[in-house]
Length: 276
Image 1: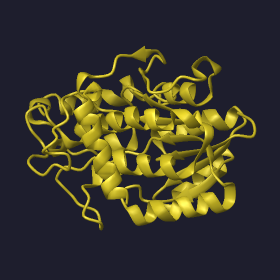
Image 2: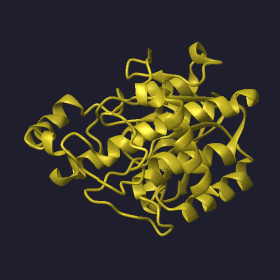
Image 3: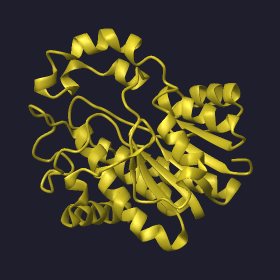
Image 4: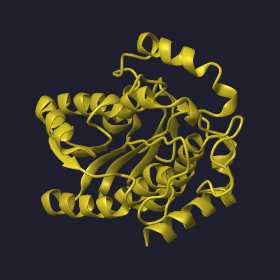
């Protein structure tokens, strides 16, 4: 990883921070990105990294981040789209885009399109319980936001997987690898703040117990960072693109909805329209 420039969104804490720690240890020049300047500076100082700030839910912030990274580095060798958002109700950003679509789908699309060098690696980090059907008439939670087993968080993470499949196809001729990593569960700052109202109705009875057990069961955040670190740095996956890896760093089958050509095209068209 020496001589490689790596950008990791959502890396001032949680899984992203441990991913940054591991890649710095491997010799990479890592750019940690968070919303808060103080936290970004503190993380960068501790890790020996570069600090950047951006709200991944806001397109203007993302465009400014692209401009600054281009000016300093020209582009990226590795991009880890790790940042997540999880709200308890439907919210739109200043551009009128549902914020989890912006954070999980649109920002990874834009950063990949604008910053990746030929031969680079993109790791898009999914999460929650992805894999349920993508609802083409509900991409931005226009019809429903939370259901018995449905949540817009899981929905947008699955949409990100569909976008990643299409992006891998589009960037194959440039030898840019685009893969998805599932980290497993982690006792992250975002999960600690998650209110009960953000859970699908069927999961709410067990959510309080999960919150109590999470520090013991999921407190070691180095474990869920392993899949991202593996895809970013290992020679074992050199040349692999358009693949989905589990928390054990092994390939997993794509969910059926992600393999649906109609779904992939709809998500891709949404990204093209919203990104301009």
